[in-house]
Length: 212
Image 1 (spheres, helix red, strand yellow):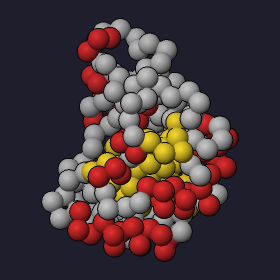
Image 2 (tube, helix red, strand yellow):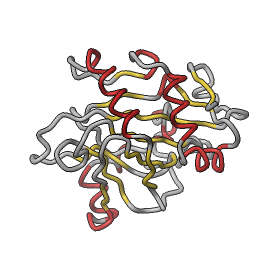
Image 3 (cartoon, rainbow, N blue to C red):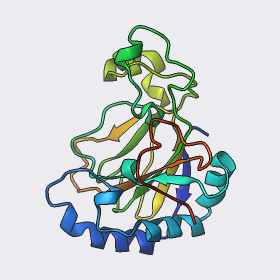
């Protein structure tokens, strides 16, 4: 499965949403290190949920959460097509060439909805249901280019309630799912995990915390 649906406690999502209310008035995205949340509390909830088994199967015991690259998002403005594994890749240095072997970082993203109706009444997440193994260059990430390459029949999205989450690695193409009918506000929390014993150089200097 390209994107796997998982679950965290709805009560935890509601509590985080209430704690975040003072930080969202300006509509900006913020990393977890700058939020009024206790990262240890957030990771403790993740560690106690079934998703822990999937994270450790992929990344080894007690994977490292990159707090500098774990984000609170509001769905507006919408993010265009991208791959999480391209984090800090130097596209200009390899322009017009195939990406190097380490272009896509080995990671897992846990994308958590904190609001009701995410993907129905509020912006959600849309992805391409295709098993990619290569870095997609920026010139191929426009809406028209992605639709032409894959066809919109491969586009998927999920409708999520508070605590519902999506798990995926660094390869899937995804973007904000936003339609005119989505008039409600959305909060989501993105947690990015890496192998604790083999941090990529591109993130090794970031603030992080291992899953307890």
